[in-house]
Amino acid sequence: MMASLLPWQQSQWQLLQESRQQGRLPHALLLTGPQGLGKGQFATLFAQSLLCQSNNADATPCGLCRYCQLYQAGSHPDVSLVSPLEGKKAIAVDQIRALGQFMALKSQYAGHKLVVINPAEAMNINSSNSLLKTLEEPSAEAVLLLVTHQPAQLPATIRSRCQEVRFGIAETAENRAWLSQQLPAGADIDLLLSLAGGAPFRAIQLADEGLLEQRQTLFNGLDQLAGLKLDPVSLASQLNKANPGWALLCLYSWTADMIRLKAAEQTAAQLGNPDLGERLLKLLNQVSLTNLFKLQDRIRQAQQEFERNLNPALIMESVLMEWQNTFRIRKRKIT
Image 1 (cartoon, one colour):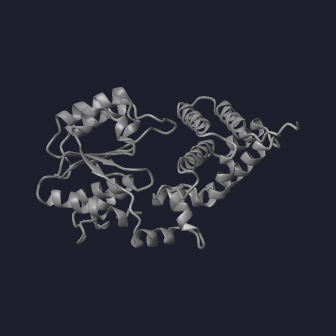
Image 2 (tube, rainbow, N blue to C red):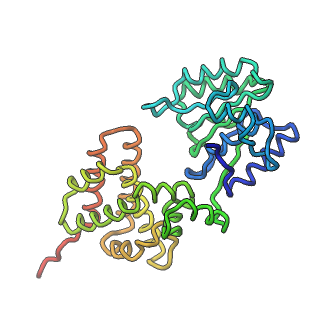
Image 3 (cartoon, rainbow, N blue to C red):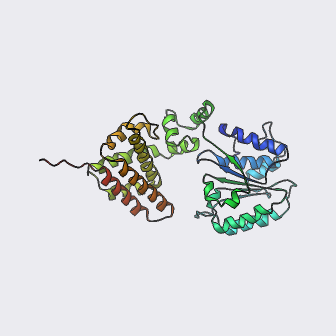
């Protein structure tokens, strides 16, 4: 099924199509912005539009011509889509070296040679160095699209050789209407968008994967931890069977909200978790701002450890012990 242009991508699409019409299309584009905005979908749609024989009025691909059909079947000889191999997290240097050979060949259909690298931050040092050689000596037919939500992870030498196309988050009636069509009836769009940082695809993921329910279960478990009615090891075991990465993200978000509330002296603050505002306020009575920052640092460290594939069970147990020590309800001594 052919991808479609999303409502919040119109300005970026028009910018690139104008550059194309004027013969000023860069040979390398860096598509950046938060996760959940459909940058990868945009990249493949734009690549297909460059190959299409009969674009629509808005320059989107027709989906019917021979080139569109080849593209959708994954068999267009002038297209290379690069991502980590199955079971791998990094894009291997051999994958990028193969791109050099691919780009050296002439287009079989006398058009562009298209490469989409997604996610670009998955390239390691060797892969990045290999890509740099291709960027330094591009062929006239070459168009490379690098997709990333972490542009700082790419070497400056690569970023400087690409034209950046930035995608941002903007709430509009059109965007909300699109999102409401993707979500189940009765879904709380405001809450989902708040938890997703405004990113529509992230909001859909939260709803589809039952992450809101897991979030509520985690918060209830933390209440039990504070009251010493549950031990960190038991709760960690439950979370690791579900989605430990999501659990750490929730913990970090809640701590950030409490810091906002504490710094604002418990006045109105812009929260990432507006539905938990009252419960987070109650927790503030048990902790200092200094200890909140310490806890936030520990959670962030745990996220980095998790990304490095360290022992998830030990990571989660350690963080929950830290949380329990920070918010444990201590009985007052009778004097």
